[in-house]
Image (cartoon, rainbow, N blue to C red; front, side, top):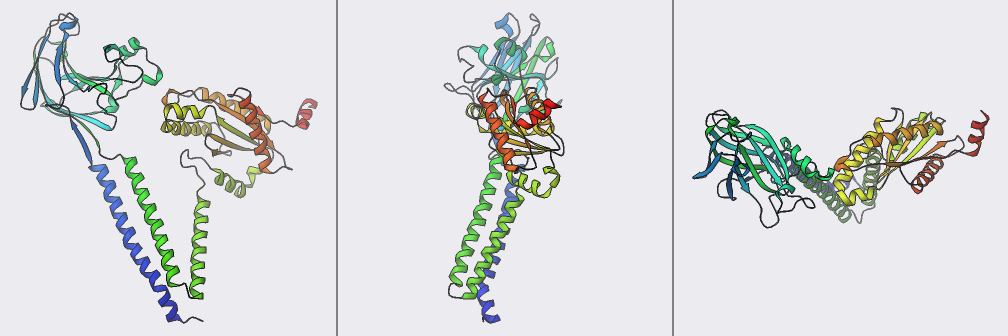
Length: 453
């Protein structure tokens, strides 16, 4: 039998490793907190638009039959627009423009959060001005036809009364209605997009007051983050996983090296490995929620069936659902849009079922609903209601989402897997019959009983 001092000596390397791990993970925790705080409060990415960074021009309404006259003066880094407003036209204006076009590409502003404009206005009118971002979109815009550029705009911005900095979030922009009426874009191109901006224009009208208006632009800047929050979180999770895996690997190697020749040490190693295996199994058993949609996963359904006997109370209906043509959504609009569709799909289905029902993400674009105290006919009605509810939704990226449904009823003599198999076969039949429909498994004896009744 191994003495207490020998056992303590054998465990000493393990104790040392645990001490090192405390420092490593403590340091990683501090680094995580610092990086998250830096990402939130700092890590600013700023791009200067004014000054000498991009070509600048001034236009006025004379090209449209007006009589306003605009001119540009440079004073250091300041851009000074002199605009003599004349009300020959109903909407007189001057505009200060920035040209971002290089070859066939403009400036990607999609990774920025907001713009800042530092300026000052003097004149007989108001400091109100409009802001336009002209976007060139693949498949819609032709560079030689100005009408095809998408016009993202804000109609009314005001500089601070005594001059200063105006903060303009990109979410304030909307696509100009007159441009939609003229260009008649598809739904894909009707939303605001700023990933290929070729021009930015400040529309100065001074409230339509005739006279000399002077707009001094000190600076116009784009503001964003060097690293997005999602990318930062992904990197931190990867660092934690690598540290945990590395520490477990080092721990295992150290134990095997130190305790190879000791039977007691081998027994201890087996005990530790068994404890780790049980802990991993316990953690896996807790992972009952699908992280993307927030509904149950297969393990969650299994746990619910084992812990809640009322779920198996007959009659019980099972509804199998598959989103139609989901692969084409991913291929056309990308996996991010596909994930958005899955999240909304789960929310729509969850809002259409009872609190006693259980919604499960079976895998990919397949979902399962377990409906206690529900026969196959009631399940078919519920499935039809859900199918119609999908038609009433507005989906991400402007896609149209439908689904196919298979319904079956659990009988006391059947295993749960049997009713799921029947529902899956009905789902296959619905898809083979043209999709966007409900098919139900109704045994011959149920049909006969229904006809007799």
